[in-house]
Amino acid sequence: MSRQDPQVVVRLPIELKDWLDGQARVNGSSRTWEIVRSIRERMARAGKSIGD
Image (tube, rainbow, N blue to C red; front, side, top):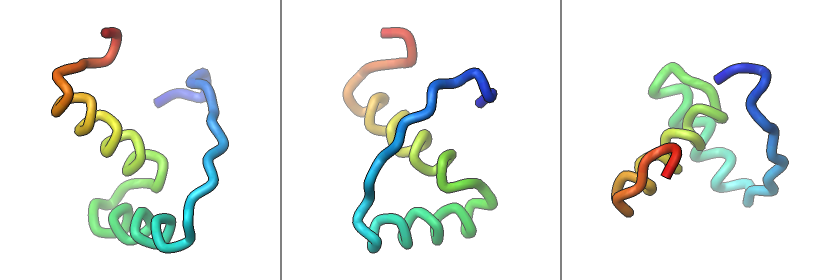
């Protein structure tokens, strides 16, 4: 993702933030990428793709 992508402020329960941080460590990625990955997986299950 580039710096031109829009930013969104999201409040998360601490346990969800901690889980995301752990997933990011395991996957060698960032918390942001873990959120993006999760949303894209959910979109795929719903039969949607980016741009739909």
